[in-house]
Amino acid sequence: DPSVTRLMSKLGYVGFADFQARLLTEVESRLHSPLLMMEAKRPGGSSEGTALAYFHSVSDSLERTRTAVPVQAYTRAVNMLLESKGQVVLLGGRFSRHIASMLAGYLLQFRSGVRDIGSLSPADFDLLIDLGKRDLLVVFDYRRYQSDVVSFAQQAKERGVSILLFTDVWLSPISDIADLTMV
Image (cartoon, rainbow, N blue to C red):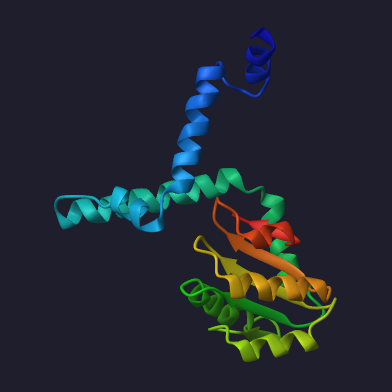
């Protein structure tokens, strides 16, 4: 159909076959578990090969981030972190909570009112009572998204808390309510 071909061309694809191939690649990548992705990236050979593969992987990740995220988003994230009038509360999942804790440590050098939740427990939901429009919730949420982290963010948003989300390309469910999402 010529109208489909014109649409694919306007979207930047060579044709429908190109669109279909890229779509299938994206769907396949979304279906891979983190374990399968790790296995696919595992280099073979010497330790020097492993180190070089790691450096290339980091370099590629930084380049993808640089081109995918506009500079204005970084500026806005910094402003949110440093100019929030209330508390800055940091939260992460089972593994990403360690990144949240590291950021909390750095933020404490620049401002007061920083709280690192660490490992989210049912008692931490009581903290929501003290949060409101002047506060900022910083969430690190990556695939195998945890329902308790998503629930905490949703309840914080209902109280008017601003949300800065750091997530992966598959986008945490929190991205629907976040004021700024960094991928």
